[in-house]
Amino acid sequence: MQTLDTLEVYISGKAFRREVVKTANTFPKEEKFLLTAQLKDSARSITANIAEGYGRYHYQEAIQFCRIARGSLMETYDHLSSALDEEYINEKRYLELKQQYEHLLKLINGYISYLKRRKQED
Image 1 (cartoon, rainbow, N blue to C red):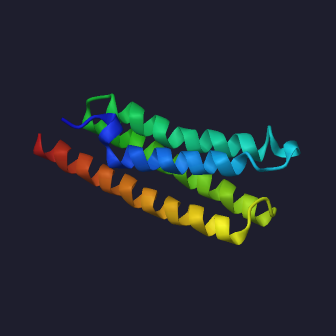
Image 2 (cartoon, rainbow, N blue to C red; image 1 turned 180 degrees about the horizontal axis):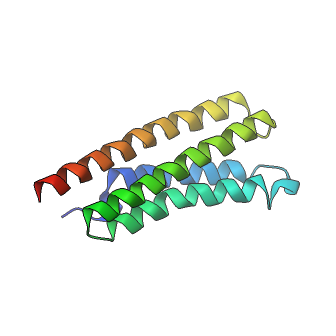
């Protein structure tokens, strides 16, 4: 039986979150309560919403929480773009995180599609 900790989208979300938090921790101190906090919050929201949806046991609710997770992923991407623009991260680091973002986006979309199919089957 699959658990949250074996769900590929959740595992990848956690890996992305760890990298984002590690990156945010390098930002200037004056950003601690601004971009750093926003970036960490949005990254944490991705896995939190996947987990909450997983725990709902109803396909439509799980789908909705995954959509929220996808929105948090997009928000995280925008914060990373801001960090690049403000030169808190370099182009190489940005592209590494962008690659992880794109992979996670595909996984979230795939999981939503899976949940929709399961909903139709029931």
